[in-house]
Length: 582
Image (cartoon, rainbow, N blue to C red; front, top):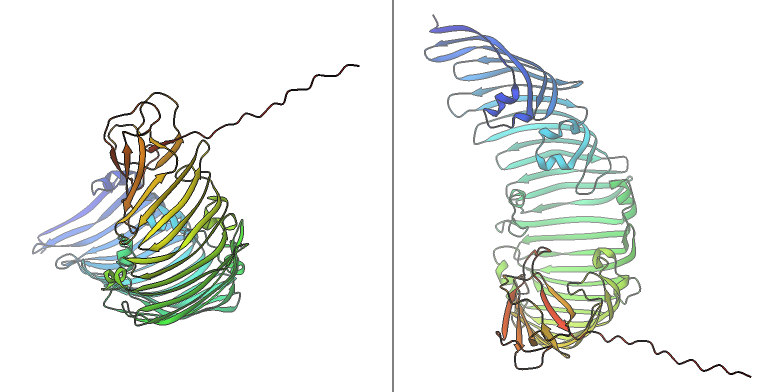
């Protein structure tokens, strides 16, 4: 005879209050649930049957018309004989078992059909909620596992799926057939398609690598992309905030073999997004393989008349790259409308694995030549409407190492006109000459709405971890920054110095110092308290140093420098000749 036997009849009058007992937000749940059944106990083991029913529920802020479930309580497990949720024509059916004694082993199956996934957005993870906009979904899943290990298989069909990644894509259909196990997700079938484009292949997402096989993309029935790739990259590390390089596994080898046929980019963007977001043609071939510190292979990329919507300037480019035991040799050319061709020849050792720290100390050779770039003709995705006029020209030769480079050549800016610059400058011209380990700023003329400033200077880049820039004004510059304590500055403002008797120390030189690889720069004002100034002299400290803030907010302090105001000439009024009377 059983030690205990009884009937159960209970109800949860407010599902939200009940959920709050387990730490959930009561606003995410609502409705009433009835529970009926029997329970018994024999030898301290519980058995019985429970039936759960509810209607007009809200679960994770999602409306559910009906809920019904039947559970069998056994000596060492709970058998979920049936769980069914319905919402209009949508449904989800599940069944399975859960071990209640040892390692909480579970096994089960789930089938669901949803007319529009958007109706269940609040039940999705936040990252999916923003990206998955709408679409019909059917799902079949079976799985098993315990608290520490999970495995299973799934089949998903989607119709009219609309996602934002980050731009909204045209609706597409999806067929995903896959399996998962600890540290591994394998798609036996990966097929995404709309009426103009289709993507098929096999995919594996593992803890330490990402692999795509038999990848095929067709555009309006034309073969566009074919290939395979194996990338020793941990997506889980990237999702946790790691950089791309830190997410690479140096113990594995990379293998990329891709071919992109010459493709009309307007046709491609229209097929993917429903509108021509770009134009031009693109084609590429690449075969790169080997260890991350000893890559082998080659690549070719060709771009013709590339432009984006509402941004007419076009870009054409060709690039060829070879890898031999990690040594990369690149030859590339770029052509913008109305500008002379830009050429680049580069040779450098590439380390992406355990030897990454050596890259900055390996030999490098680069030759960059740009006879004349008309800045106002640059595409907005490069210029961000920064330039209103100007010609940038130069030729630069780089040798020795990235950390300790030797640079020769020159850069020159003619008639540069800007908007939204850090110094509120509206115009600038200048010439920089490289002399090996140093460079001389022969001149730089900077104009704002109120002042014209001319400077010259020197740059020491013998160690790019400790770059030193010294700038002196050709005409007087004074320090208008308040003498109060400031932890850091957001930038530099130029303004006309007030013509008063207030003391403003004159600046002999501005010294900028910092690393070319980081943003922690400082500026030191070398002030001459015994020299000229606007007004009486201030005998305060002759040296002031400020740290530049990273990600400075608009209300943070600025370094304010004063210059002689731009002269304003009144128009000459010629005296009128007296009228002659006859």
